[in-house]
Every structure is written in C-alpha cells, then in structure tokens.
Image 1 (cartoon, rainbow, N blue to C red):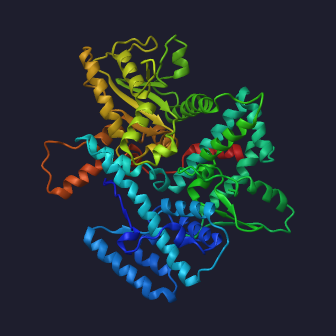
Image 2 (tube, rainbow, N blue to C red):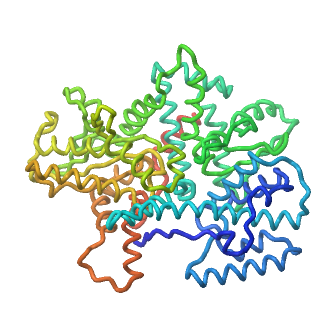
Amino acid sequence: MSLGLNIQITLEYSKIFTDSPDLDSLMSGISRKLFLNVASFFLGFSSIKSEFNNNQKFIEMFFRNENHDFANEVFKKIKQFEKKVGKDVLIPNHLTSLCLFEYAFKNLDETEYQTEKESEINIFKAYLLINEINNAKGQKAFNSTEDLSHPLKLSAIGLSMTYSYSDLVNYNPKEIMITQIIKSIFLFEFLEKNDKAQPLLKSFLDYFNCETWKDYLLKVLPFSFACINKKKEAHVDIKYEEQSENYKSEIDFINKLTISDDEALVDYDFTSLRSNPIYRVNNTTYRIIYELFIFEMLHKGLYFKLSQLNNNLKEYKIKDFRSFYCDEFSENFLLYSTIKKMYGGKYKKLSGQQIKEFGIIAEPDYYIRNGNKIFLFESKDVLVNAEIKSSCDYKKLEEAFKEKFYYVQKDSGKIVNKAILQLINNIRRVLKKDFDFDTHYKPDNVVIYPILITHHHQYDVAGLNNIINFWFKDELEKLKDEGINIENIRPITLINIDDLIFHHDQFFEKKIQLENAIDDYYKYVTMNPKKKYKNEEHVRLHSERSMVPFSMFLTNYIAEKSKIKCPNMLIDKGFEIFN
C-alpha cells in the first residue's frame, strides 16, 4: 500500500507574470454571467484524476485560436517553473473555482466592455491570482509553527496548510453520495420518531410543499444522480419545459434550493452554497454549482436548512438545536444504529444510554468488548469556526482543536473534559474494573482501543491524528504515574462515522476486523527511529506517510483485502424511499 500525501503546488500569478494587478481590475468589464459560467464549468471537473490536471490539455481547452501565442508563452513558462521546483504544478482546483464563483456572484453585474479575447486572458489571470491569494495563506502555516519542534512540527505544518480546503477537494463522489443518502434517511426517521421534532419536520415539509420526507428525497435525489452519471467533465444543467403540467411545482421546488442575490456569501466555508448549491441561469435552466455540495445537500445541507427553519418557529422552537442534533441524533441515534449494523448481536456491547442505567456518569458513548479487546468510543459532532478553519494559523487551530477534543478551561478555572480526557477517564475505569456492567476480563490482559468518532470530513486531514495522540500520550503518562499499566493501550484513532456506515458490511461479515485495521494503520504511519532509510526522498515519503488520516488508509486497506461494494444499508434504506 502506498498512500504518501501528494500535496500539489498550484500555479501562482507571479510565477508567470511580472505585474501586480488586483482582482477588481482584471474582472471589471466582464459579465457576471460569463464568470459564473466559467467557474461552474471548472467546478464540474472530476475530483479524481481530472484530465485537466494536465496543464497542456487545460490550456488547449481554455484558450481560443486568437490567444494562441499568449497560451504558448504561458505554457513555456509553466514548464520552466516546473523544472525549477522539480514538481508538476496544478492550474485548476476546486477551492479556487469556488472562490471565483463566490467573488463573481457577490461583486459583478452584467456590465461588459472587454472583448472576448481580452476577457479570456483576464479570467485566466484572475484564476492564477486567486491561486496566489490562497497559497499565501500557506506561509502562515510555516510562520505559526516556527517555534515547534519535532515530532509535532511536521504534523502541525501539514494540518495548517491543508485543513482549510481538505474536505472541499478530497472526496470520493460515489462514497459520499451513498453515505449522505443513508444519513439523510436516518435523520428523517429520527425526526419522525422524536416528539420534540414534530413541528420542525412539519415546517420543513410545508416549506418544500412535500407530503412526506420520502417525497422530498425523491425530488432531490435526481440532482445527485445527474452529477454521478454525467458523461464529461463540465457543469450540470437542469432544464424544465415551460409547457409541462408540473412546471410550476418543479420550479417552486428548485427555487427553494437556489442561491439568491440577497443571501450573503460571507462564510469562507461556503455555508450558503452548501445549503443552496444551485443557481438560476434563466427561466427554464438551473445549474449545479458544485457536485460535492449537491451530495452534501442530502444530509449536511439538510442540517443547515433545518436549523434555519427552527429559528423561525416560535413556541415550538427547539432550544439549542445544535446540541439537540448532535446529542440526540448524531450520537444516540446515528452512532448506535451504525454499530448495530456493524456487529449485530455479536460481542459485549453497550450504548451510552444503556451504561447510564447502571448509574454511571461521564460514560463512554459506546463500549464493546470482544474477548480481551475493549473498544471505547467517544462521538464528537463538532465544527470549527469558518474563520479559524481558513486561517492556516496553527496556534488558532490548536486552540480550537483543544477546545473540541481535549478540554475547556472556564473563567473560574474549572476544567471541562472533552474526548481525550473522557477516554482517559474511562480507560482508568476499565483497568480498575470500575464498570459494573462488565467485569469478566483480567485488566492485565485486555487491549484497549480508544476511538474518537467524528462526523465531518474536515477532520480527515493530514496530521490531526498525530496531534490528538501527542496530547493523549501526555495523559497516558499521568495514568502511568498513578501505577496503571499503559502498555496495552492503543493510540486514539479518529474515525469518520461515514467510513463505518459505508464499510459496515465488511465488519459485519468479518472480512475486516476493526482492531486489525487500527493495528495495521499504526504500523503503516509510525516511523521507526532505528530504521536506516535509503536517502532523503525515502525519509520524506515515510514522513508524509505518518500524516495519513485513518479514513484514507481504511479505504485502501479494505480494497486490498476485500471487494469494496455498495453497502447493504443503502439497499435496505432505499426500499423505504421507493416503496
């Protein structure tokens, strides 16, 4: 297995041109319509091995014959720069394309005085300038980690450089669509069963003029299927016939999913686009902005819409909707349901709710024992503030991650335990046999696997698992000082709930054992200080390997040992929609 992180260099304006324009001067006089068309076309490029990652093909596609000399000169300079840095550089990328779309949507009108020849050159220049603006933030990653020492520094740099955009560009379209469908069905089932959520579910259905949530999904799923089934790398248009008897209802529905001029696109994490990932071209044509957001609209975007609608409810408003969603749905419903699908009736298993019935507080979110192997789960459905997420500043990111996953210190000095300290506390309880619900093991013989379940792809990022374990090791040493044997405690593993959902059949059928996958992951990412490496390049590759997130490893690990297939859960849940 070879999974070295390939952090590509995007081509910057100053590497090709010597002047210093601003975006306004380059984009002024080009119509908003043209810019949105170009940006959405670029956003239609494949997230996996796009043919336009080849600069020659991209330039040949982009420039007309009248700009032949300009294009040739640009390509020549690109090759010279690639030879200088010893790496290929990338022109189109989804982060810059999203920024281009956002800028044009917010700032341009239909004023047009540049010629087609001029506008083509200036759009290209604007694209490289946005690349440069985004890359400049990468320097903050280096500056903010200057005072760190090995072994944390490499992970801190990798995390700071990639965290702002990793979830926007690193995804498998089919996998994310499938997991989003499954999670959306789980969410609707949860809302349907929860008395407190009835007014919110009714408000949602009224808003979209749907009788049931199944009707809603039947209306939105074709947008995702259109993205998956498209024949070429380009934007996807949805067209309606004005003469159709369903035209009015179809237009009314899609308008509810369409980004409008009065919506502020001020969030770097593109929250508005995630909620409304379609824009209107004309009376009969609507265009998908970005396929990832169309897939996420099925569940992640659904959360944003529900939150918005909940705020409009008066006496029936759910107080602290975020907490309600994370605790009641993400942990108590989604996590529990997923683990049951993974293991059925096997092993000693107790959910957090079941553990509470024994009078235990600060309980694990889930507990599993398989012989002498014990799994302790903590589930954290948390989000990092978009401004911090985009900062590329390790000090800000470190503080945010500590608050989400380590601890929070109140003004009074009180420490509020988060996932790491919660896991440490429950490891202590296991090794002291303080859990009345399970005492049929010998503490010296058990191997403990602490697992941190995350609910967003933004945490499947280079270096984060290492940083979490850097803090975890400090806490393990404190356990050791208490006289507790820590030899059989494995490192914390960050696991995305989506990976467990998508691969649940592999675990249920025992084609893959979670403990083996975790053990092999740490063999793969751990550098051996005693090993003699062939050369500096070999050291670099192993260093990059150490930052690989578990999510990336697991997909390849399963592909090597078994056949990745569509999860049975999709078939089971799909029947609930179409029946």
